[in-house]
Length: 443
Image (cartoon, rainbow, N blue to C red; front, side):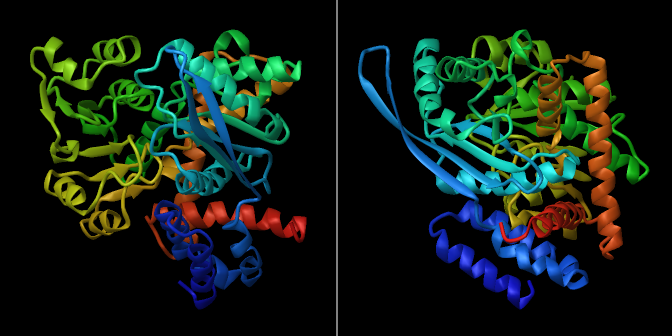
């Protein structure tokens, strides 16, 4: 990194101690934007500002469980950057959530949103609450308490949260209901990921998984290849993975393995999507149960799914799940491309190993932008009180993901880094935000 940027990074670490995920995300961007700063010295004025959130909110969330005991969790919302539009980013409910995780996710969201070409800024939020094992009524009471504090900080023109890990349609419904109750307003655009019955958008549920596969398809096409016949491995088994598998199969590939926190399952005939949906969406069960119902499937406990040989890897679970050992296993297994469906699932060491082996690599801020892209389309439909068909929405998603890919590719070439999707994504995203911040003056 240039000396001035190193100084900014040192300041970030000093001001945000004990937040390694945030440090990692900032460093990855700052290491990439040197060529842009050399060509546009004026961008240096905003580097420090873009690393500092505009607003950080931390609050207590008391709620009552089904046994009448009052529990307390901690809620967060980091409104990171609004240079391009209202803050936009999901809410994550998971025990691992703390301020550093939310800041890392919010920082990534700035550039991800910028890459879509839509007028949305970056933010993120959540709580250290675990919805797993909780009844619907417990989840409802938690969401109502969470929104009772959050409502004062959000709005269609201010900050528009969505779902993330642990926050699906059920949670968004409870959150929206409480917002409407408190404010006495039907602001459909205050949350995205809503149900179709009350302002949601077609393809929103499918968007992140579909979008990552669309990006992978464009990346392979750029290299003169395609998804047809490709052997694919994904990590995770939730919403993103279900729809990534669906789209891979539609485009001619075959997903042979997926995972959850207990291990992974291999089905050489291709993951049975109907069975996976029933297991995860209806029973809310563990993936190990898949092998009990699929004759040719094998469940493997407490091992990494990346040891399964594949052509294409789609990490869709959580941050830093692919380390050096996992990257080496992917290389040994013949992997030709890694496309991040989650946020920062690949460590810097792993990225270097993949790069040295010639494995194409697409960072999450580009490859998993499909979710927020369709959230932006949901905001457009809410603002105009309009609805689009599934086909119209999917076609628009495909066009956005093609544009994101082409921007990353073209920017990398423009700065003499052909094929470097990380540099292309970071420079293009930063450039768009920097131009807006400079135009706004000292804000």
